[in-house]
Image (cartoon, rainbow, N blue to C red; front, top):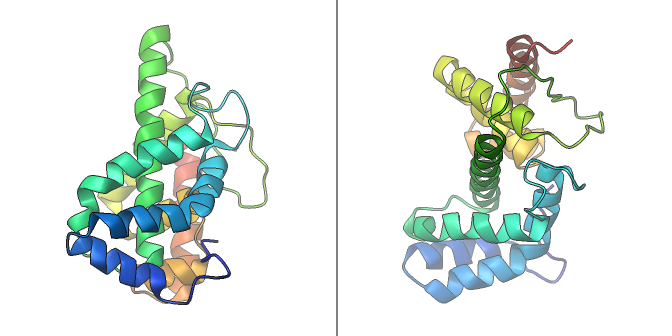
Length: 196
């Protein structure tokens, strides 16, 4: 769960994000410095933290830096606070990993196979191979066409590691709605990806 460092007063990140939106480049740099450890933890989770992840040559540290480079052009956007920032960071990481996976598959000329991807919070999944990551990304895009909110719930929960409460706050819905969307999205994704 994205938490502020213990010495950071509540609301500081939101204030810095607003300053960044107003054009203060130093504020965005400070946001990055203050959230680096949490972004690194998120990158580790998204990669599943082991060698052989979607892009074996892309470490968690490299993933954080690549995602940050995607976030910098968005610095002038209206940030809605900490959960919004981490949700966008997770989306940026997803984009970086998908690009790396596509490049890796293009080099191998591989795969039309369907590979299982687990969205089970309790499971310790093996690192997703490029084929799995691409299948997940494509399924998530199809889900977004059917139900954009459910797709956002998956992004927030799976890629950003947000709690149901943080996801509800970010999306402006109830926690019960998040739980319902999460269950429904997981079932739909499992069917779509051919998971047992």
